[in-house]
Length: 287
Image (cartoon, rainbow, N blue to C red; front, side, top):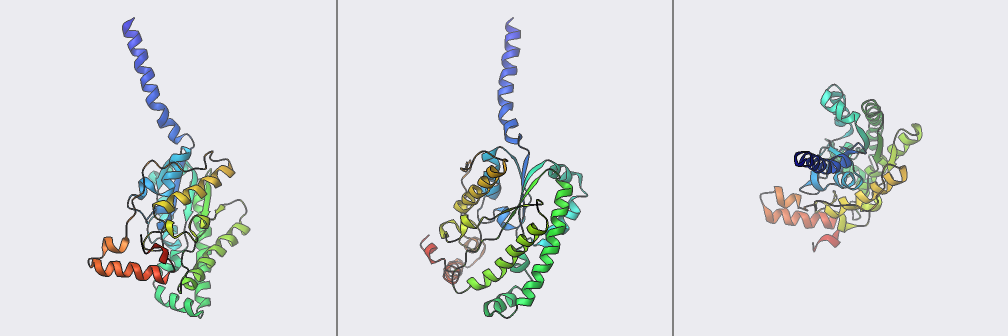
């Protein structure tokens, strides 16, 4: 009798250990995909504390982060075309319930002609070039989402708009590109109703320098929490989640990209200050 009781007790303990594991993935898989924003580049421990991980942990999703820094729409399209031939990626994407897609800004900001584009945008003289990039982005976006629907037929794609966190003399450069990316997203959504759910994460970042990393581009730890809150709210509206307040299991670790990777630390600190001034984020100077 004691042996039977021991077996039953062991099975109960095993069941109690298995319940949390099941609960974590009972909603399916949440995937972050695209560029450095989705990757969580503004913090050291992005896989543990990026907004995708926070959303997944809060709402009980399994989590995969396939976003990569400096990815533009052409590179993501090429990557997906290769991935759909690999059973490893096909199996993961087939389990996706939600895909948080951030793509488009690097079509401008990681462009080979970025300096010419920036100068032209500042003086307002290269609108045709900027429009041509937007047209190419639209074609790539159509193909990207077609592949995602093929690989993840049951997934909801949250297509994230680009925020703008530059307010100084360089604001016009950022906005010239940001507005074109967001216009393409709106154009796609209008032409393909129901194909994606547009998710504007601007409320988490705009006019909130406290949510911005020292590079004045990416979200810091607080910014990732703020973006997670926006995404959670959207999932709740869609019936894909129940929680709207982020659960942060692992705090994000902020870092200064320039200080971290430049050998000349004095120059790195000077560059940090200069960029904050040029982008209008002087409130962050004392941080």
